[in-house]
Length: 165
Image (cartoon, rainbow, N blue to C red; front, side, top):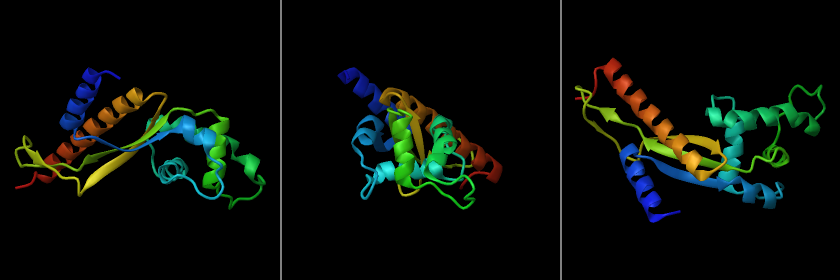
């Protein structure tokens, strides 16, 4: 990666107030993980996100769908209380060859002024979002778009509430 590209990403991170909190290279993680016993914390968090009941980022949908469509290998279809475990889900991701990058991004919650033109934020209160892409550069673009959406959400919310003092 060129210095110019790194400088560009640094400027983008500053402007968007965006951090990559966890970066999981699924190619290396899934190829070397035994999925029994100890699983890397970030990989475990990512798989938990895929298995969660709450809405997930669009880029995660193919992975979550693959797990849901193939989890019958691990249980009796008549077992209504079955919940796939982290290790089995990891094995399915490996079988599905999801060898890209899982990145958890963060951006601070913005508190906008009454005029809506100024805001303040800090890293003590922030949003997070997992994304998946084939390359880190693609994941970065998804992170930038997500952060911009969060910022617009905060601005719209401030407008509905009349903004801060």
